[in-house]
Picture: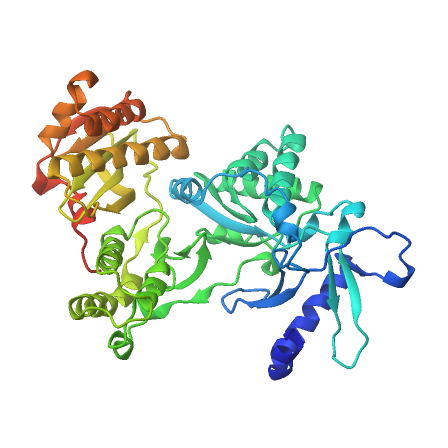
Length: 495
């Protein structure tokens, strides 16, 4: 089947052949003559296929191996008998949030990270595959020598090696070790510093540290032209034009677009409007479009919550995956979808800090409506003359339960959402705050927070206990509804 697909697409065949040839040339796999193999031990053969990534600045075609395939229906696949291993890196939310506090920001990538980690020779017999560059050639058996895409344990094996490298060499490269431990998501780094000198020292240490482990770091990008002057042109990231939405050239950073010249963040791949599709809209099509809206920091939450509400309506009417949807929902979807391209025109300043500030505060807000509830967090920079500036850090939204829940209880759920959000934000930013203040426009929720737990009903008591646990050190205050910025998150709004 693979050969038939490649036969129909000569360009893809060439890219596929080049990929496998490079695999061999780099020593990441070797040919095995099974007739001459003295061992009669179990083996496993990995099916493989092409994954095309047109947006990639380097490898457009990547061969991915499927370790979930069964050689025999009665037997287990390789992934079913492998332990995946725990997560050893920080999540996208923490890394992306911390990325916003640096004056000099940079991103980079470890070249072929998985394939820089060797698998023990006695285990490689489970990483074999069939290959031939042309159907007229004899079939070959290749044995993969390195950590392989598609195996359940591959992410852990590779990232755990980075952690070990940071432990072993950390004393000599303290800054590089910290970045490797805290600011990497798989092979992508998002970090920075508050001075050019610190940023250059971070880059030097990180590069030398990774070289100690046999890793090559490249695709450097920064908001500072002076920083990039110290990077060889071959190791710089190639930016992609994004002029349609009023930005300069951009790169992708952990699911968002970053315009380094303007130093702004944007949503990746804003959907294109197509009215003719809306007339034939189905649950499957709407779900597919909504799933493309990736927003790790909640910077576009007011729009995305409207998409979530449409999804909830589809579940309420029990629509089939490919059945025509209700006319009202179809019209709402057509309106929302027509506005989605405008998401690309929303540019959010990446840097939220001011170098001349004398103190910083965190202010979180929660709010609920009949249909949804949400929370948002701002960083407040305070200056010597007493003035201040606030910038949005992140937000989170949830659709309200479809059963009948009172507004005060929804406001309580919003406060609980804020408490969970702030408990992520404070450790992620790694800053000293003069004060952390949490705001709600519900006097009932604020009264519940002061009451003894044994005087509250079960629903309220459980959530109040969790809120107190997360926010015991912080101050809760009242904000009038007209001044509550979380209102837009709980009700939704077009771009």
